[in-house]
Length: 307
Image (cartoon, rainbow, N blue to C red):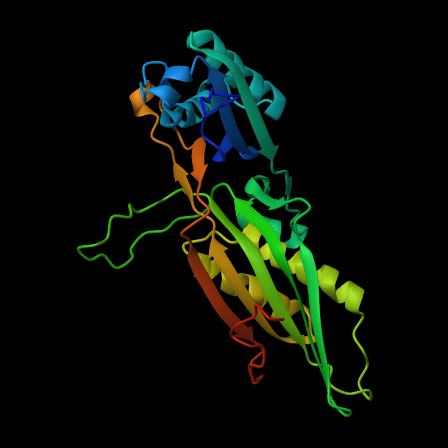
């Protein structure tokens, strides 16, 4: 039976772009997931394989990153309008552009006044926590006599847009990673903490207050640590909890390093001065460790996925 070509489109989906705007010591983040779909005079590429009217999808990806630098990202809507207008007006075969954007919101991490004096009042303006992502978890075990309570959270995404370095590491013939002296540090926190309340004769912790305080100290440590490695930041987060919450003896973190790579904008005649990043989702470094109160035994399982 004869066939004809129906509705069609092509493009580049899920272009992860993070734009950092530096207003002195205060940083502003726009974190977008941009999908581009183009349609128009595309019959020949389907029927004969002729690419004469095809703008490569790689070019649409590059345009997203270049526009983040050239126009900035005032809003997801305005950014999408810039892109759609560009594709339709600059390429005669393209008659329609569909831009879909997801925006991931961040809010600033509040730090304690007592600790701010060590880092300067301006330094806290570069630390953020992703809104609306956190899931609280707990596991209670009881054998008729003793209790074990392990609580925690997962999917808490945090970012420092500066005050992070990574250098001085081992290099061999397979090493290509460049040393970084000013990088984005971001992770999706999975954390568990074990309470030292084990029987009914002890005073039961205030669970709600404890959770809120643990999260506060965790975030403050993340924000206030000038990080030379994600391991260092992890240890500071756990130590801050142990040192400030007497009801907790053990903390375990699993921190994937959510890599942000500077996009090379030189082919487009643009300088990328630590502004436009590609947010990679995989592969990723995974940093895990347990922090214990001195004298306590580790009891949180190494694999926390089933908690």
